[in-house]
Image 1: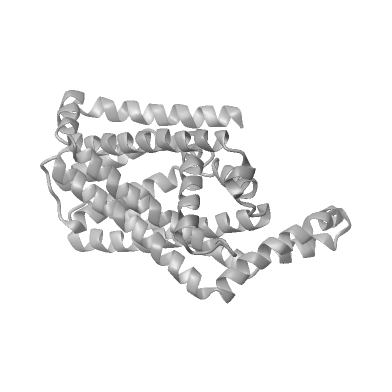
Image 2: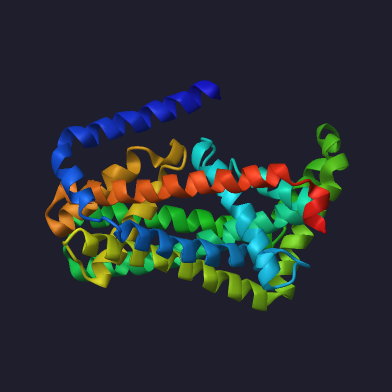
Length: 329
């Protein structure tokens, strides 16, 4: 596994090297310098998006009040967890155990409930992403501003991703994991799973209860997750405004949709190194006619990501200074 992670990291570095070889770094640096204090606006946009996504997770935690205090607590936990997600090569899941553990140790939310809420939040986020990508793909077809090969690749990727998310959702909705575990336990070689079946049943019950008994929360969480993805379009739009190459809102949506689809498909590469840069180079180059401009947009987003990672670990450091008992007061 360690060798595989090293291979994926090396693959990302190789892709990044290819991107660098294709563009003029001096031109990219010149473009980035145009942003100036506009980076504060972009960080502000992402702050709003991150806060909204935190509330979406809050809505998925059964028994947690929907008030400002808990919104602040969940926001802090996401800051810490997402920082780990960004630096641990685990497909954006490295920080999830951190979130569940901190929920339990600092706020008394048991691990089963915390884990269930994280599964729900991830599922809802992916469903919202599918909706967002469908909108971007429709705009791409309508605009006809990209080569047909881009449309074919994007369509195939979207179809595969949508099917995967749908199956993941159906598995939860129909408690297929529990049913499969029960069936396996009937066989002599599968009796060992009986000890963990009650844990599986409990988790499935929590997921099904949320989807079927708290439909209002489900709808609210899905709406908030979709708003979060749409704010990514706002970030791209204003980034290009600050770079003196404004695009339409539809073009900004297309750029963000392609970038997110590529990042999702390359989840195994740490921080999407090279992948994000390549995606922006291709899609921005196709829409704006300037490949260096696309890489500049990627660099600006990297700057924002670095700010967020440092901020998240700073929040984590403050948590480490406070005992769980103090946090529960």
